[in-house]
Length: 110
Image (tube, rainbow, N blue to C red; front, side):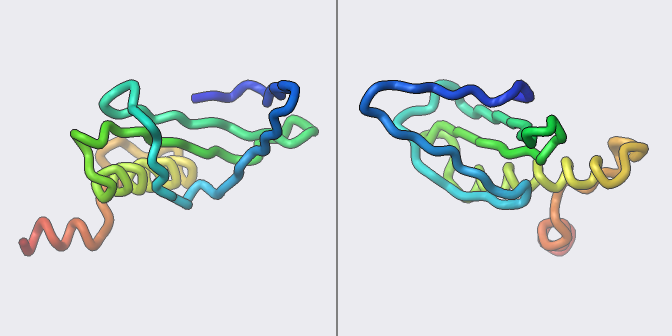
């Protein structure tokens, strides 16, 4: 979890901008090479006042081990767990639904 304030990198002749999204959005974007088999980074964003403005995350997976659908499903499950815990922090781990209702039906009826 990255929850330190934002930093600005200024290099002569280089322009950059930040990208924001919602906690429930997922977008696949290829990268040159994965440093690890699976890498999950979560960053907390803050307003100028210091108030939390939510989280964003990145999942990087080795293409020779994970297909895009699997990575997207893992990210969706992680978001589902975060949303569930944020809504009720007193839940026991066994009460947190990791798979969607559709996935559960596919496993049960299968």
